[in-house]
Length: 581
Image (cartoon, rainbow, N blue to C red; front, side):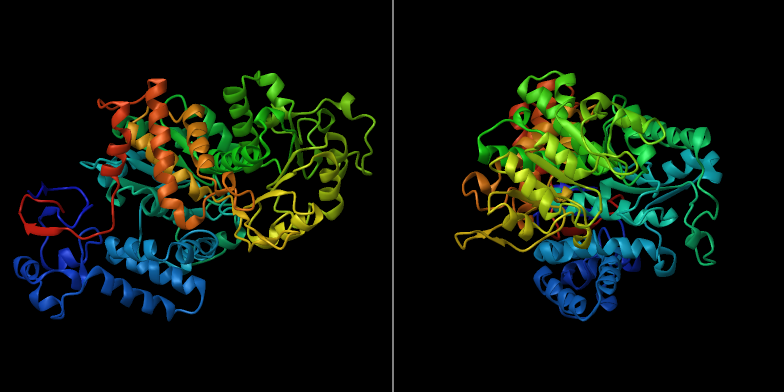
């Protein structure tokens, strides 16, 4: 027996959809357009017979044609532009094409190519996508928000103020590109229905001189608003979501370093909020660490951590791993904090740097001066990375500094002297900013290092001639699943326990647990399956913590997750004036 649905996206070709659109309105709706895949009956019923060529194509034929067209574009940015155009025409075809060429096309719609598209947003602009909330128009914010969301069951809102975009900094209104890209990854890798997702840019101005002087800039041409006025604007937006979409996940993306942690701390107990720069980076790194200690047969609490780069990512990793140590190994917060040594452009984060160089969020990880009085410093009185490694003898060295080559041969060899199997994660991207080429780290440790990077790298050669697979610590292996798990359970918060449960599940999928020469994390080709497992673990943890907002039981989580996933396949349409639009 066939199901009849009025307003949900197709997840099976057996579904029948009641649709109220006809003719050109149907062909210009990316949600419902099938292009040449409309059947003869549908063409007749919806007034499309003369609007389409005669031949009815399958989704496979449409993907083949679209892929041929894509390959004719030479540069990544041209491919990005083509895919954006396809997305504006036909969601099913767009996601179907991406899923067939996942590893090849994800870097085109996401990092690194999306950064270039965002940087040139005002010059590439053709058609708006998402919700633009602008500071001088805040009096109409609720009205504008409801215009886009009224009557919709929104499950995901991805928002940015675009101050710290993908390593290229303040991009003003172009930040809508990262919100849209993140949202697309949620759909591609976790099966979030794109009709239930909303991308938002909070246009509070820009301090980017290039944009301010660009006569084609499409955003609000003003210096970036800061202070109390800025905080009130953000809070007004968050309170609108809490009022009108209380069960959705609010994903903060690419906020500046002074605001990212602050907003996460401010709102995480009020609503289900998530910051990928902090929590996503921390979670995928935690998963890789859990896999690494699975190889070494040790515990998180046994490690000594040096983190080079104390921005949002570095702090997020330290906080996430610290919290996991507390929850999984039963260590006090104070003792867990002592296992971390953070190094930034001022050297080791220690007391004598003072408040001008140590932002409040780093306070728990500040080292006491007296413990470092016997360590050599540079002419500025700073303790540099090599001296930190010499004194600490870390078992874990993590880089998120964007300082290419910072993990020198001396640093790596010094680390190896202090532990048998160094865990080295040079996570900065793109690849030319990586702290050490993993091939070099492998060579300098005689093949004993356990490695993960922030960008894809080819395998390194072991002393025995075997290939050692370099794991890619890609947030997209986990953040879509973390979000999906929260949406699935309708949890009131995204708790530390839920994130750790997701990281633990991802770590359990590590190929290295079966073969130590394999990668610490699943291959990106397996990202959809990995994110489903993460989502299930996260939702189950929500039940364990008693913060779920659904009436069904924990035992049903897997079935509910599989049923809820949106798939890019066409359903069968029937015309109904009262149907979906």
